[in-house]
Picture 1 (tube, one colour):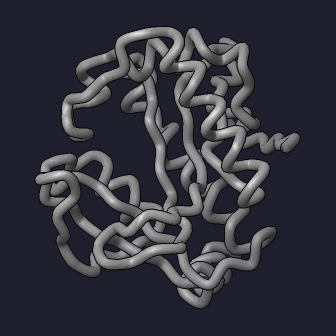
Picture 2 (tube, one colour; picture 1 turned 90 degrees about the vertical axis):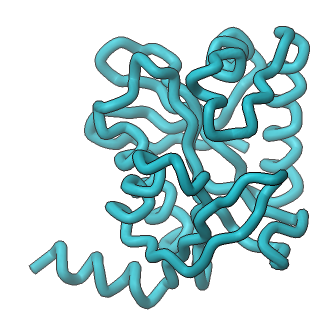
Length: 184
């Protein structure tokens, strides 16, 4: 899958094998994994496996998380984008989830929101999705704020691996209404 979107501050593109060092740095950081069950990876080989898994998602589902590259520095900042979920989450399966994971030095710059908005636009405009889900640990107020800034609305809480999480959603009609308001 070749993929390339530019936002004001970011380049979003497919993850590649050469991103393994960035994924390793991201997924070994305990701050990054604070709300993800505190289970960081332990080897560069696991980072390579993560990229291979995402590349398989591109082939199987035509979508998967994207590398987030900061335009001003050219640095790997993390990943963002859509993922087609085929496992059971919150008693549901076969849905598209918007997510993001950034290195702490890129936090507070609006990159999660900027990249998530681009993912939503792609999902509703290019993939013609009916709805997109967002999930966040109930204690991760920053992640929930990102989802809400993007227009997702709280639906309910659910348990994920023993962690209480918030389930948010946005439908295509809500997305279109937001876009029309922004154009006025």
